[in-house]
Length: 370
Image (tube, rainbow, N blue to C red):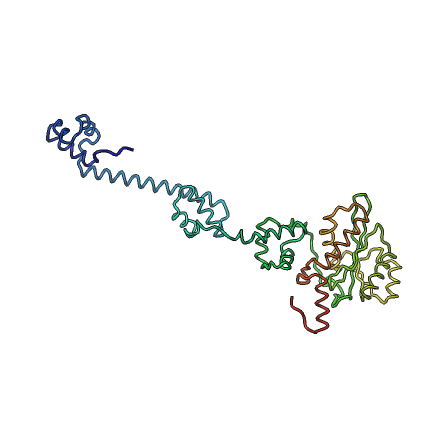
């Protein structure tokens, strides 16, 4: 814009001279045309210099007030938009402060409204770069074990040398969107006598039950699961189309030949477990058959918990082509359960690690801290 030759005060003084002297003389003296003086007179009229200064001050004050009002309206509008979102952490507030600055609010005012430091506006968070190797490792394990959550993945990372705290592992896991879909909740029963005859050592109480499934070719699967309640080891998963009492006795004989004889066998009241063949064999072996009360599966809770993991992590995650294929896959999973999978009730040790620690404690008399 072209700058005016005369200021408003100078123009008023020229007009005052024109009132005392001829206009032509005044115009010549100041180097302006006579029409300019007439146009100035229409614009400023009879205002004096002091009145003109006062008018300019009022105009400036009015412009300042308009600017303040516009800024206040903008602040109210922006804060309403920000108020719809959950702003808790410092990073979230800094992000909203940057948004407010982008909308036209000054940096100082935006930081004051959102209670953050101005220096934080230019700060680049380094946490994402720091966590990138951990996220990559978590994604790899998540693809390998789709039903494992942050707690078990944290144990695998610790085995690889990536030591994480529980809270940090949960934060990174959730931030990467790797949460495992929640299973359907079931009604939990409470009883003072949840599990009669609680095991106090290895090879004391064995529990067994059946899990059913089917193959792609239509073959039925009946799986006999046998576990040690104290060590949480999976002793055997026998897979067949039909398992009678004689087959149950045969499986128990094979496991006893490898591990020795337990004191108690815990099961429900299924026909295979109350058959004459199994009961007579248990009497000959000197075993106690402990059957749970009807309608109270929590009394065999350890085996029920194992069956839930077996179905969730193996049966539901695999599509068996045939019964032979199912036997191979299930046996691989059973070894993984005993040797690799961390168990929360064993302080996230594997059953094999827990057994080794127990044997070392019996030998040395000192409990090993893990």
